[in-house]
Amino acid sequence: MTAVAFCLLTYRPNHPSGIERSIAALTAGLRSLGHSVVVIAGGPAEPGDEAEPGLIRLESVRLPRPALNADVLAALAEPGPVVAEVSRVLGERRIEVVCWGAPVWGLGYLNPAPRGVRTALMMHNKIRPGSAETWRTAMAAADVVLPASPYLVDAAVQDGWDTSAWRVVPNGVLTLPQPPDREQRERLRQSGPLRVVSRVAPVKGQAPFLAAMPRRWDRRVEIVLAEADFEFEVGEQAAALAACRKQAARRPDVVQLLPALGWWEVPSFFAGAAATVISSLEPETFSHTAAEALSAGTPVITFGHGYVPTLIGPAGRVVSLRSGFPAVWDALDDLLANAEEYHAASRSAPARLAAHTPEKAAEAFLAATAAAPA
Image (cartoon, rainbow, N blue to C red):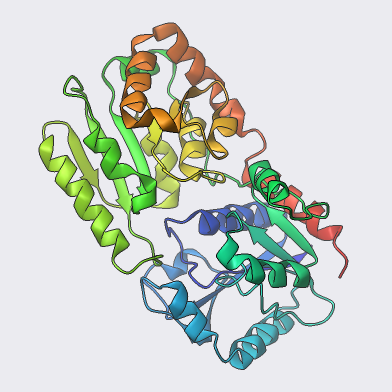
């Protein structure tokens, strides 16, 4: 048995963020394989924390919600207390492997691990020029870097980074539902709703997607918008939510905005959808919601950037970003109108996740960290 710790300051159960969902799936997979796991996060405590029995809230880091990058940097300006507390926790729990969830928000650049503890650094985002130095520090400190998809490796190579020692650890999907049968799926194709699940943010493209809805569209559009505990700009979530509400008000006959779902609820929500759309204006480095839709046999429409086109393969349609959201609606119409192609896409969807069970992700994590020098 291996004792593992994950660290991400914003972690909370059901938080609508890819890194948290990745950690949750790895935690579930590792435990099912007989290993022990704790998750280290910043304070203060939140309602719902009890859903993760291994959650440890730090006393030395307390963040506002939502937090900005400046808030995290301010909380870590004097790193001594957090370094001491994390090191103490790892020692007391006899942790053998610690995985930093990000360079700053996951404490990777501080690397507060006792001697002899193997360290890993998750990579869920492309390295932007403004954060390159922090990434460089965190990667140099870690024993192994764990990108979440081959897309991240390819992007880093194009930017001149040495990725020879990186090890891809695929994200897991927490729960795999029973996809609807052929008859149920046909009913969904004919009249089922379009369902979208997303963290609310301008880059996710929800409002312009709704703005491009053609007048001919007459089936339900159900969009789950979840607010996160972080922002990149002050008020960006409120602004994005207001923009979505404005667009929904134009078509109250079909558009319904819904509150956040728990992690375990998302796949079954997608199982009742005719299709979903990944409307992100920036490349997604994985896309948990695309994976969760695939797990339910629900076809995915996406722009042709990032990892999502590779993830979905034949289980949907890919549209050029240059063609814009009108082309997304056209692709959606076309797929729903073609029964043969629709059912072929639906049948192929669950198999796209063969490597994305919690156990498969955990096995890849253990293999990558076992090979890392302590």
